[in-house]
Image 1 (cartoon, rainbow, N blue to C red):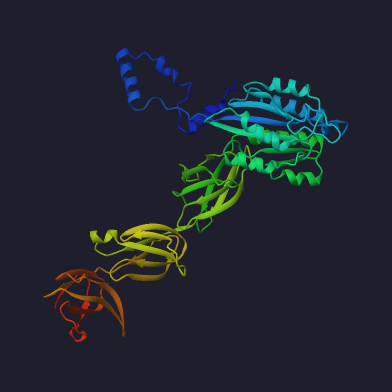
Image 2: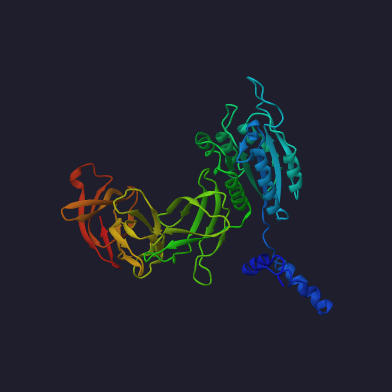
Amino acid sequence: MNRPNAHLHSYRRHWGIIDPDKTMTLAASPLPARTLGLVLSLALALGGVAQEPKKPMTRVLFVFDGSNSMNAFWGDKPKINTAREVMERAMKEVTGAPDLEMALRVYGHQTPIAPGKQDCDDTKLEVPFGPNNEQAILRTLNGIRCLGTTPIARSLEKAAGDFPECRNCRNIIILITDGIEACDEDPCAVSRALQAKGIILKPFVIGVGIEDAGKYSLQCVGNYYDATSPEMFDHVMKMVITQALNTTTAQVDLRAADGKPTETNVPVTLYDQRTGSIRYHFTHTLNGRGLPDTLLIDPVYTYRMVVHTIPPEEKENIKLRPGEHNTITIEAAQGILEVRMPGGDPASASTPVIVRRTGASGTLHVQSLNSSERYRLGRYDLEILTLPRTLVGDVVVKQGAPTLVQVPRPGILSLQFSTPGHGAVFLKEGSTLRWVTNWESNVTNVLYKLQPGDYRVTYRSVNARQTVYSVDKDLSIQSDRSITLTF
């Protein structure tokens, strides 16, 4: 025998949610009252029984064309008759659907068109939102007389107030029209404003027998579907209802260098392509079978995806097939870069390592010395803030074994001054001196950790007022060795 809501029970088992059929065993258990009390107390202490996250309410507002042009014949009957029949079949499809409320706004049905005059305020919410109001919508449609003009922009603007406040709702508009805006207003601008404010999702627009010139003016309003015949109208309506209501799943395949979806543990953000608002943000995960985890994603939006690797990878204009399992694929091959100082000097762990793409001037990332980090495969330049700075160019990060960059351990230079003085430390690079550091002129001793190499120290006492009193001393620094110079 088929179990009712079998798909819901399967969903709950998949996510580790307690099966409601099984929760009765606690109440029917012959446990002693004291033991039962302890069990209940433990459940409360641990946060209570696991609950399934509340599914959002889907609210669908039909904005229906009741203008005079809907009286025109389409096939063997007026457009309005075909539209009523299609709406009736659509209502049967969604009758009893959970977490669904519908409403109906009609325009162009109250004021007849007169020569040189049209009523651009002819739009009205005929059936407010409510559960199980399919018959009320059909009764209203059957009583409509198609009389007036086509105020699409004004209707969309008024529609913003048709949705009562709700914190967990998906607000969807399905606009059914056989004509274009007739009141010199901009329905596209109104739609963009409503979406930007988060009042509605991107509207669905069903064009009923519209000529080519009119189609283009409506495509910017939302997801446009062209019903070129009564049969196509019926098909398009079913497809739109499916997109509005059906659960859609997706997986994000982060491809490694071999083309397999094995990259993971990376934050991923899905943005609404048009408004830029964040719709989903999660850390990519491989499930128990080693495959990208399945996500529940709303198919209404077109998405821009950012995979937060270093550097990030982006993919735009992602459209999902509603009611199906979708695979979103993006190249995200990574390798590991290790920057180490042998011996694990604890003080060196805070030394910054500036990472840039080879040939680029901008900082890509700042890593710490004695650490590992994942990067996209490629070539990088490193600037390690030792003293002096260590520059390592064209480091190749590959997939597989980590790329290791080792930094020599420093040596110690101690400078002792009989009197405070001015001076600096220079690194000798062939016949060139590269400045490394100055010291404050009021001190009598300083200590530096310097990378191995040949150096020159220049000193002049604060009391000496002539250049000839400058003193230079050359030295070599070796790892883990100390040198003291006195002046």
